[in-house]
Length: 251
Image (tube, rainbow, N blue to C red):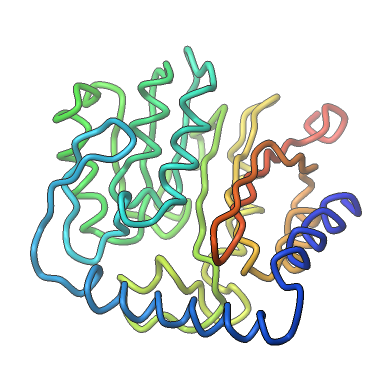
């Protein structure tokens, strides 16, 4: 796990070459959040967009898969996997773009999970509209809380919020995970209990997150991490990790 911490630290530092730039980046990130919250999440109008090759209905308060590049980055990665016959869980699904990408990549079943009822409504409509309704189902749940304990998944997908502040409402939970990442840290232990032998847990982190804290949570849950994809944009880097349980520990 030291390798994970070192890698995350290096990426984090490479995007913060100086205090002045660090302040500028934080200011820009805050401005983007405020604009997104005001003009995207708070809009009362349902939108239909195209993203990652899908036609998607995006209800108010749901994370927009076209305006934020992380969704396209993650969906593109999923599209390169062979998921034939796999059972998938997409935690924090939003519009369902990652769930649909997994089904398109061959998954036999995908459970799209979100705490936001509007996100569940989006997935419920988007799956059949894209010809994938027979393989994608949606459930309103806080992480795995409402998922039956017997269910196991070959692949778990998770693109968590990047910031640890208190969310102002359900829409803002796409950006803020509560003080100390309160709302998402349980996912590692929950995923450890739900992942099938030999399975993988893919998590997309941001260079703006508390990467040391995330690394410690990953280690506590008994996962080993491997960086499988990375992309840099003006204000942050996307880091996609595959988490796996060792064969010895999974017995």
